[in-house]
Length: 175
Image (cartoon, rainbow, N blue to C red):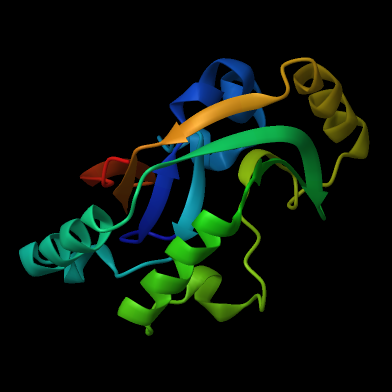
């Protein structure tokens, strides 16, 4: 995470009880103030370039997106990362695709991945891979699955002095 960044994400408050303690220990974004979430776009527009017009565009954009339900039936891994895999992931992929259309200069993860896999990170050990720890995280969380959640809003978060704060929240359309 760099100073002055921003991110668009979907908060998943239903996951906090299950993953909060693990995230506080093993996910650097949690200790920096980011709640359990699914990333839509990171990095997004630099914090210093976000305007009232940007926020209004996002508000109007998300107001057209219907809320939806998710289930997290299992854990999965990327190299060095343990995460909850949402089902279905198609609504999230659509949200990401529409944001890329609206803001083509800000693709998710700076365009490093051809396929952006929606996920809720629990442990990120890419810096110091520890497979025993990752297995422990999976064993500690597996009993709480499946987890059901309702996507009701998106957030714009910004970083300043190694802390992330919610700059704006964008309610999704009701069903």
